[in-house]
Image (cartoon, rainbow, N blue to C red; front, top):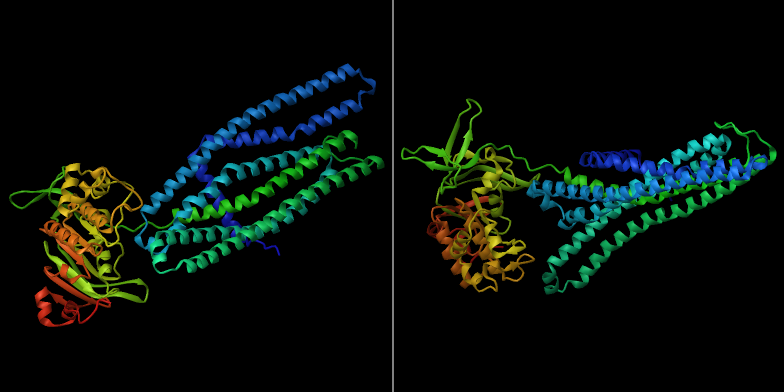
Length: 636
């Protein structure tokens, strides 16, 4: 059963198309209008042969009392004009296709740029709550559907619509009664287009969504292929894939079932209409019925024969429009998803305190400098009096009664208060889900707190620009992320203006230099697929070197050595100890041996601090930390 599209949906689809066209015309303020002009020009030329046919037949009808040589000369003259017009049409076609190639590819390029630029400004929460494969589908399937719509469907629809309009006026010029018959047949065709096209649009939108889910699942399985094999989960994965693939099949099947029914119906309606016009025109001729037309001519062969040709051309162009409906619907479905990504709200940043290079004078005053120095300061403008103050960056981080929840009504942290003085090493210990990583996410402002305050060197972190805040923090995560490029490129990712010598020094400090020197090309060795040609420990060493070259005053180590063997851990620990000197360090670790030398150890349980103190103080207290350290209680 055909399904009508709700009026609201049609309005949204029209809004998408208008927005897309506005973008295209803003990208190409000259090329786009020229392309439209060429489409209209070609459409008009392709619509007027019937006029020449009518004039030629009329000349032949009236040639009984004329010199045939004169008639032949007039006919040749008309044919010559038609040939010239077709040559112009050919030239316009060549220019048009060149322009459309430029317009289409550049539009897709700019949209991909806008999507990626906006994606880089989205909060971490967006990536935590959206499937990565589905996000990738915006750049592949949705862009491809849009490409087909811009390069083929929309130009074809405009061309066909122009032809239909020109032919309509020509037919009115020749005969109003015959035009009325054609219009009646077209109304019938329109009913089919609306009903069947409406049914297909619903499922084409679903098809795009199902395709995104399928790609997301496939990417997830590829990334986790080792886990799948370890747990012998191949059959279950196949079943899950078949379920998603079946859903995509059903949506695509239904969409194309409606769409593929449309073409044969319209084609045959056009043939039937052609026959009807031939019969009606013959009846009008035989009965001598008067003709109502702008031309004022009576019914004759010179009217009926060209009219038959125009009817075929008229219905054929409407049929062409119907064939492009599927591509337009798919293109608009892709456009909707593209705009949804482009319209995602950026990460909010109301901060105004900036991080600047500074120089401290003998009297303790701090001044800003454009040159890179070993010291930093917070530049704090005051709107009340227009003054600017500078606070040296020391790495003093404090939390006051902080509450936080990822989902409303499900608190993760409750009343967290802690401090880390400059140069202190603070360790977080607790079971999985206790809130250790969440605290570091809040210090980075990956998420904003629900209540309480976090101060950095006495400044509320909400007042600090996020880029500057994060530039002052170095993070080593449990899951390493290396990028396609050389080892040197990956280390330099921590600070893009670092020299090769500084990158090598950072690698030596972290303990990575030894194995890097043994790689086939040393620091020039190419890394692909997140450093798949390295061991997990080696990847972690490079990520630690990346932080070392950034030389941040505050460091966050989130299970930084969890993927490293005991021997490598000892090497890394020496480098980390050297790196930690003079810095404020937050450590998250399950291996309690790595946090023994911390100044403060904070024990978390269900989002609350239950113990704090040095290693010896907590051992003496014989609380939960003591139980964890002695193995009486597992970190589960």
